[in-house]
Structure formats: structure tokens, C-alpha cells
Image (cartoon, rainbow, N blue to C red):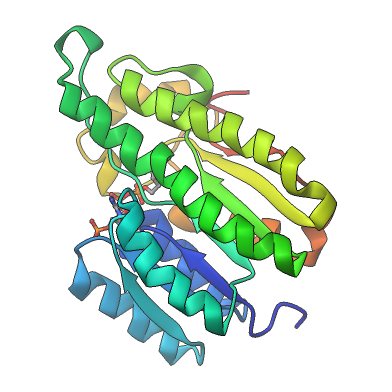
Length: 243
Ligand code: NDP
């Protein structure tokens, strides 16, 4: 296959959507640089599954919001090889209504989703520019498209990812570096465990939450040759919840 041996860096890939993306891409023939923050056992289990598929998987634990840590891990590796793709997926939720929101809850969410886009996007795009190829895909959220009560921090961060990705797509297009966003609705992971699904399901035309592989498949498509003419786009994977 065309993409064989290409390396994709996936942030937040020890669990949930990120783990599914890493596995899906490994099945498609990519090698994986797998980032996470603290779930070492979970990350090692994904690494083993990827290696069982015959692909390489390098574990790169660091906090994506920590610029010094990201730079210290990635820059020496870039001397050897530059990954073809950056999938920026790592995320957290600290839900609260704004009048009660603590500054910490705002800062943590903005740091992990959006400041990390600056940190990773800058490190990777510099290298991709010089290679004149690459793909940058961020995982946003329906909350960043519609706004979600109780998630002013998260909605702002995800909307920021969408705006930042469109601007970056314009900056990098001429050098053949494509930048897109995948925006999931409700997807079956730990992040949605506490939500009142009985109230939410009637709002989804397809009548169910999504599966992690339904997000991963779109990421795989955006990394493929079939997506050579797609940049600056937001692809929603939300069962019709927002159109
Ligand atoms: P999970 O909570 O299941 O997994 C989050 C992943 O991100 C873990 O691998 C975690 O690592 C990692 N992570 C968290 N903070 C950091 C950090 N500071 N540095 C590095 N890694 C970090 O989340 P989901 O799979 O549900 O979500 C993945 C992405 O999809 C997020 O961006 C989320 O906002 C988005 N999304 C999810 C939806 C859903 O319904 N689930 C809907 C829409 C968007 P560790 O295990 O080490 O903590």
C-alpha cells in the first residue's frame, strides 16, 4: 500500500478515541508514535496490539501542554525521522457552568486542547514544511461547533482548534501540508460515562452514540492519498446531531 512505513504521531492514544486511531492506522500499515500522559499500562497494551499487527510503536509519554517536555522528546527524534502525520487528539473535560468555574478548570482545558495545538503544531509544521509534505489532524468536538452549556472552557478550546486549523491550512497549503479537523459528537468512551444519555439520544438522528472506530476511520481517510485535495475542513462524525 501507498502509506506503508509512514509514521503517524497520535497524542492521547493510551485510551478511547486516540487508542482506536492508533490501532486503526496500524492496521492500515502505518507505524505509530504513541503519546499519552500517565496511563502507562494501557499505553503498553496498545503498543503490544500494534506490534502484533507487525507495525512499530514508539511510546512517547509527556504532557502535551508542557512545551519543554514536548520539545525535549520530539526534537531529538526529528533528527532521525519526521512523521508524516500529527493527529492531535489528547483531551480532558472539566465541566462546570461559567459562574462557578474555577480558573484552574479553564486553564487546564485550554492548555491541554489548545495551547498544545500551538506546541505540537509548531514543532511538527516546521519539520513538515521543510519536507514539503505532511498532514495535521486535530480532534475537535461538536461542542466547539454548537457551544455546550456547562462546557464554556471545552467549547472555547475546541472552537479555537477549528479556527487555528483553518488558519494553519492556509499557511501550509502551498508546501503540501494539509490541515484538517475531525469533530466527533458523542462517542462511546470514558469521557461520556457520566452524561445523561437518556436525555441526549433523542437529539441524535441516528439514535445512538458513535463508536471510536467511526472516528478513527475518518482520520485514516484524511491521512490517505484519497484526501490529497482536502484541507482546512471540519469533518463532523456525530450521527447527525449537528448539521
Ligand atoms: P479519554 O479520556 O478516553 O482519553 C484521553 C486521552 O488523552 C488519554 O490517552 C490521556 O492519556 C490523554 N491525555 C489527556 N491529557 C493529556 C495530556 N495533558 N498530555 C498527553 N495526553 C493526555 O478521551 P476520549 O478518547 O473520549 O477523547 C479523545 C479526544 O476526542 C479528546 O480531544 C476529546 O475532547 C475528543 N472528543 C471526545 C468525544 C467523546 O464523546 N468521547 C466527543 C468529542 C470529542 P492518559 O491515559 O495517560 O491520561
